[in-house]
Length: 404
Image 1 (cartoon, rainbow, N blue to C red):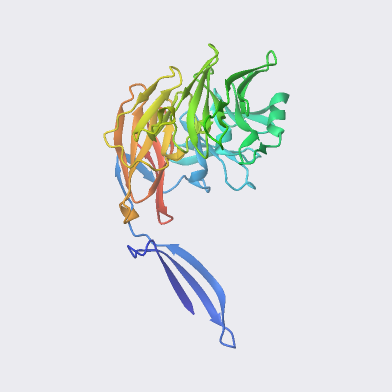
Image 2 (tube, rainbow, N blue to C red; image 1 turned 60 degrees about the horizontal axis):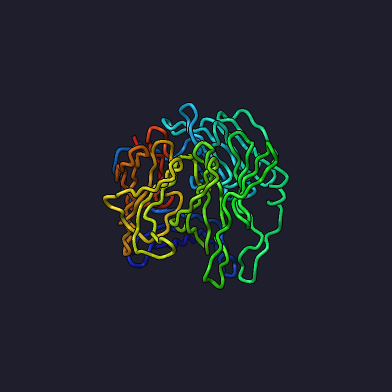
């Protein structure tokens, strides 16, 4: 007996999204038992792409999940990716991809599992920041070394977290980063943002934890995911509030000063910085001094100057939804970001627009690629401005593209 179940994408549209087929056989008493089965997504040809791009079915030689890939940088015409599986039983790998052929040309098993926020290109080296050490790999994926953490930093990481009666931390660790010469470390704890210099075994407080007044529950805004930026001259961190980011702190190491910025989208985190040029907030809700203005703006923070400039968008699209990291990537000379339009009645009419920002002029090329119906994510931006992206509605309608 063959039984076929159909799944609709919604009972409003009654489109068949997938089918489940079951093969059963009867026993002598007339009852049935399961023999085999499979499910199959239906290609309804809902996805449409427009623009100047080249499409591929997949990355040849890569069998993993595209959502687990993160672009770190480039080396000799190849793109460096970190493949960080969500499955903690699998090791993370580093990949060299040929963007012209969309083929995986080299892969290195790191021997450990880590998240995409633990790895970055630091100078001319790939650096993986672990709890007990730093793994250093050259951009050709051939040479590997390890760097020990300062004992004081290891002690901070190994502490057991402690929380107050409301679940907020009294003992806290917010991540660390290392300078390109491996002589300085920056980290965040419950006291604030701190810098360790191993040359003279010194430790200084760059910026204190921000106390909150007028709240019975929240005590502090904590620094998180510090990163050396601006050629190591500055350090930036995310300020965390209740369940979301509330702003940023940029420390000038040469002057010994810091500045706070009171804008950040809910899912913002400096942990996703790949180049130390700046960060981009797309359609972020403006709340100066904690007061909501009702405005959504797109802002670029330049790490070198510390200036914040508003990016004027011809069509900002939908506002008010959470912008996740895969919707934006700041590269060396260009950035890319996605704006959207949603149809509440039928997701097949949802639109995603791929936009490019010139970081030197801050000029926007809007809607260089349009994707209808599918969820769209940015994998990275090359130095020449090409944008690598992928889209997926379901396994029958998905692909990967690179702009020309």
